[in-house]
Image 1 (cartoon, protein in one colour):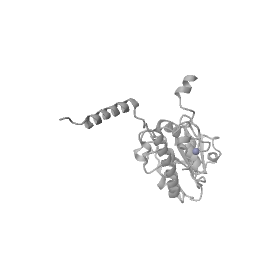
Image 2 (cartoon, rainbow, N blue to C red; image 1 turned 180 degrees about the horizontal axis):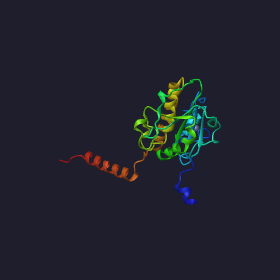
Image 3 (cartoon, rainbow, N blue to C red; image 1 turned 120 degrees about the vertical axis):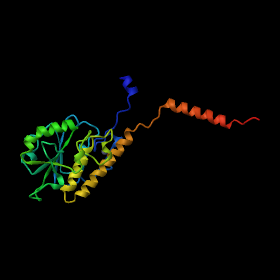
Image 4 (cartoon, rainbow, N blue to C red; image 1 turned 90 degrees about the horizontal axis):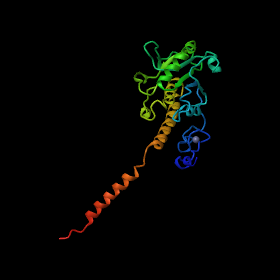
Length: 244
Ligand SMILES: [Zn+2]
């Protein structure tokens, strides 16, 4: 107990609104009012990643009025009253040889007035693939698999390719669900560009905060001291009056 008191930093305060540690509280960046959309957004969040501190899903559901996160490994009847009604829906996932995806911008919507449900997966590649495979039996009855324009090169840690700095460690694969939803909403919503811009701004703030917080800034004290002493010696040598 004593050792813990001495070694560990004081417990970090968690912001009651955004649920993030106070040094990286995002409340100032969040929209004053959650953004309303015609599209209903459902994020399927893998239980392992739901605790991840860099997950964007909690932030995304704070930003978007019509969004819900479901923590589960697969979508099935009984999890979401909305999905149980078999609404017109799309789910974001890159294509494979056996399962093609329609580019979201080429999606045919017979009735543009019928609100669409957008489903995204928040997980690592491996888990997301498993989640999609496990959910497709249910989803294929009413939902179309769609991808973003930038999905072709999907690789690495992120299941959605990213134009932001998010693929860099330690953010790879952690924050891109929000970006993917933002990009899809740009296409699906009448004022999509505005919505995308707002969401990406929050995302950038989150990444900037997190980057500043994680960056190791302290040089090792010993090296610093040694360096300073050497410098001092040099200075003294130089300032020694030359006796002739
Ligand atoms: Zn906060």
